[in-house]
Length: 121
Image (cartoon, rainbow, N blue to C red; front, side, top):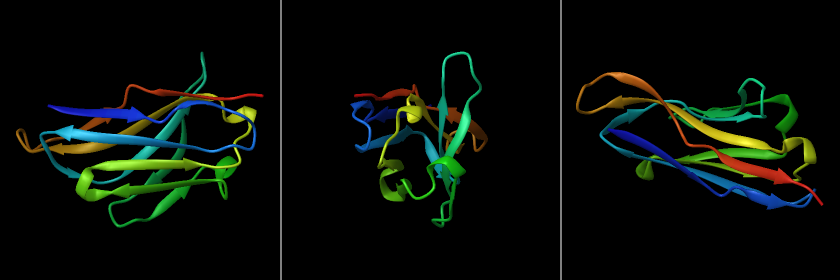
């Protein structure tokens, strides 16, 4: 069984920073792309950033230059450093990875529980 546990959300003033973490644990054989998504109430979940196992990154246009995604493969953890935050960045943030389960040797898609980010003065 695989779990993704997120941490690091909270309340921050405009212009401030937060760092989100997402740690995967359990019967993990391999993780390829790791990603962060955001979702507002009643809206679809949108991509924020992704990072491949080789370190290649992709960002939504709205966060380029302000957010940085990184990963620690030894810890099965992905991070999202969010700088110069704006009120419009307020959302619930989710991590998402396809993971190869060592017990079943099958790929499955896993989501974290979500962490609230609120940018407000």
